[in-house]
Image 1 (cartoon, rainbow, N blue to C red):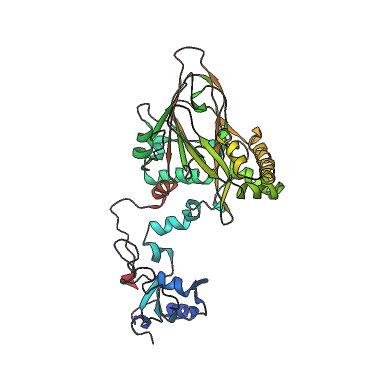
Image 2 (image 1 turned 120 degrees about the horizontal axis):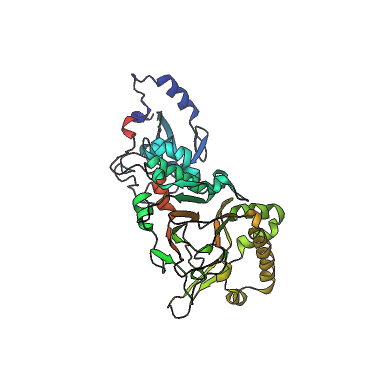
Length: 415
């Protein structure tokens, strides 16, 4: 018998319910089955939350892999007491412990588990939680008031939830004295920003002999930034500090929506963009910069679209021809031109002029951005934009985590 874990407290008002639940938890050939879940033997051992296996303070495992707890052949022998959040187990190596039944048991009390119930799949970029869009929509482009968004953390989370769903979010009403770091790190409280060879914040304005199309005044086509980095930035921030020129409207479109359309019309061609890597390169003369990567246009995580990588101005066709056979390249170009035909359809675009004091945040793994040509009709006219990047996980931290100083320990002592 399972001595310590099998005993139910006689004073517990939950005893009738717990007794019924215990009968629903069974040891199977491969592991255990309970609450509609099936766990492998090795998973149960690795999930043990007893004080010998799991550190209450650090919320990290204390035992070392394959030093005993994950040795091949260890199995659950007995099922013990089941409480609201935990299930007691005994394994074939003699160890007695407990595993969590609920998110609260695994991650601690409110607010963590309740936020995870609502937002976990969205933070994991599950397509079922995202809203794909294929046209200008008032909900997609609606401006959020900056002072309201930063007023409290719940407002900030609501704003970031919108961003995660649509891959884009607009802020308005940013005071003129606020810079990019003031807005993101101090206002939205997301940090640290990601540093690239453009520095942490890049100030983009017109340059007569620009070595980057972004600094020119011409039309800048639809693209996703920094494909020549193997780990392309997730979040991109555009902060308009001054915009008195004529033209220069912003354009955005949802690559995931284009992916879905192509999956319905040309699934065979879509498979090519998911499996054939191409080279992206950025080597502006005189800068000392040489950046190159090899990427698929679409990267999947299971059945979900995780990431789009595409920047036609940085596509290194010469390198592509050197390392990919002719037949594969022919198929890739057929697939790519078909896909870009969807992306370049103006009916699928969201278009908007951004003025001073506005910020747009885009999911650089999903939403393309572009800029129409602009011109200065007077010497004093300027278009000045700050750009910066942030890793997805630093945003997720703001969405899911509690405020500092709130110790949300597991409740194993109550089992």
